[in-house]
Image (cartoon, rainbow, N blue to C red; front, side):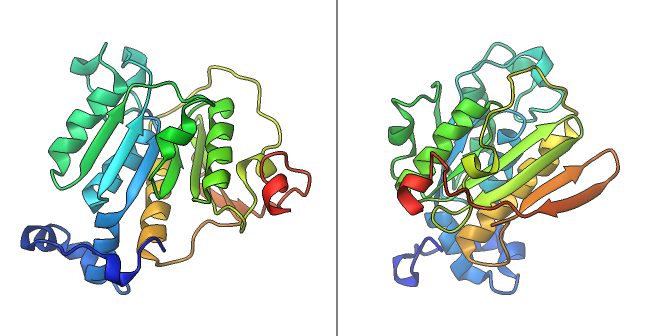
Length: 254
């Protein structure tokens, strides 16, 4: 849990009305909503996964989102990257995402950055944030997010997709296998197929995990890799183990 009750912000009457349906949930309540309002979430990527993640964290009332993406919107993005529309082609994904999210919920502070995430800037990009959402499409950057989460001792919410399938897991440094434990080597880079429903489902699962973590409810996808098979409408789980020789987390935790 991110916050102690004494640190919470007071919700306005308008916010209480806006979030009424989720405040009704058992163990969520006003305190849970205040935890969301106080939270700061770093979303790496504003594409297929980053779109649903950012949308649902915004409408849920997360206090601050930092969205980092270097790319511009292309026509081929529009089958899955739902924050971007035809009129946005040629615009940066960060600015396009920020425009939509600010219109969805004016209570949420949305900071967008047109940056390539690198070893030189990743620590600064994540500074002051409570958790990291991995909405990237390449493993070199995912590994940088993983190392940063370990170093800063903040959780990493991983998602990945291929075709009509996908995976998701929640990584808590010191408690669960890290991303490098689960995937010791990056797969070869390739242009891969994607049907828009896959990142929608996986991104929503990532957002669900973030909300549960912040509010402090439910059972997280810790020590579990959830695998979604869209073609057969099936979910299954595998239980990854921490690698004692992991080059990312072993020097710190093993």
